[in-house]
Image (cartoon, rainbow, N blue to C red; front, side):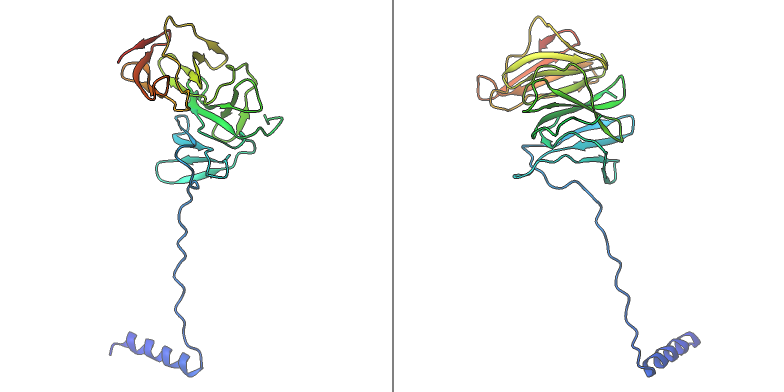
Length: 246
C-alpha cells in the first residue's frame, strides 16, 4: 500500500474511533437561469431589438387570468429581468419599435406595440388604453420607462407599428376597423395622406403582419382579417404611399 493510502486509512480510522463518521458534502445547488414566466401566445408580449444596447427587450403579455407589466432583456445567452422604477401598466399584444415621467394613473389592461425610434435610439411602445382617448406613448432608454407627453394618433385597438429604417420613422397602420397611416419622426406624429391604402382589416382582431424590408427599403404589410375571413394581400410603404405588390 502506498504511503498516501496509509495516511488516508489512518485518518478514517482515527475519526471513526472518536465516534465521528464523516458525511459527504451536499452536491451544489444548480439554480436555473432566470427567464420570463409563461404567457399566452395569442396575447403575446411586445418584443423589439434594442440596437443601442445590443439586446432584445420584452415587455408585458398575459396569462389566462393576469396581465404582465414586466420588462426583460435577452443578450444572446441569458434573460435578465429589468426593474425600472416606472413602467406602463400591465398589458398584452404589445407592439414596440426601436426609435432609438411617471403616469398620473394606472390605466386598465390594454394593448400596446413596441418599435425602435431610429432618430433618438429609444424603444417606443404605443399603447391603446381603455381609459384614455388618444393612444399612449411610452419610451424605454434601457434603464427606465417614461411616458411621452406628445399628441398621438386617435385611439385604436390593437395598435401596430414598425420601424422604417430608410426614412428613419416609425410607421403606424390601421387598427380595429381602421386603415389610416401615421409616422413618427422622433418629435411629432404626422397623419399621412397616401393616394391609396390597404383596405380596412382586423375587424375580428386578426392583425396583418408588418416588417421592414431592409434590402429594398420598404415596409411590408401582409394579410390580416377584413370583410373576407382571412386576407393574403401584400402592400409596400415607401415613405410616401402604399403600393399593392401581390
